[in-house]
Image 1 (cartoon, one colour):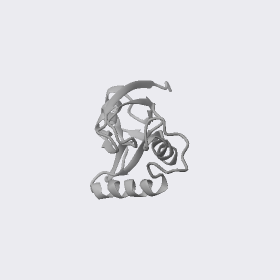
Image 2 (cartoon, helix red, strand yellow; image 1 turned 30 degrees about the vertical axis):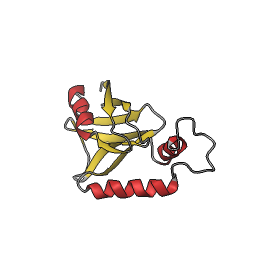
Image 3 (cartoon, one colour; image 1 turned 90 degrees about the horizontal axis):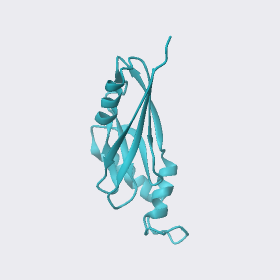
Length: 140
């Protein structure tokens, strides 16, 4: 059995803090890979945003998750030392560590095997807009 690997970088423009659904972009990479059965690994190359798989239907879930992270890592906490880029700087790094910069999804029949209500989201933790680089690797 031959193992195939395919990798592509995608660029995501964020509008500032919040989630961006990148499921279709990642699934497009999977479809172009030619891999029928395997794994898709998604990795964001930054330290102040993250990736998550969560509810794709009701945006209130993602708003509430933002509320949870705001309580765990508030902007401008006077205990923070690192604030070179403003009051959201250290909070964004902490939020990234509390969530994750990479995730893996199974691939079957050449598509992501996500559940009905699951989507892949890039979660921007900075308040300003950014262009984020995401590496998608498909192995099968």
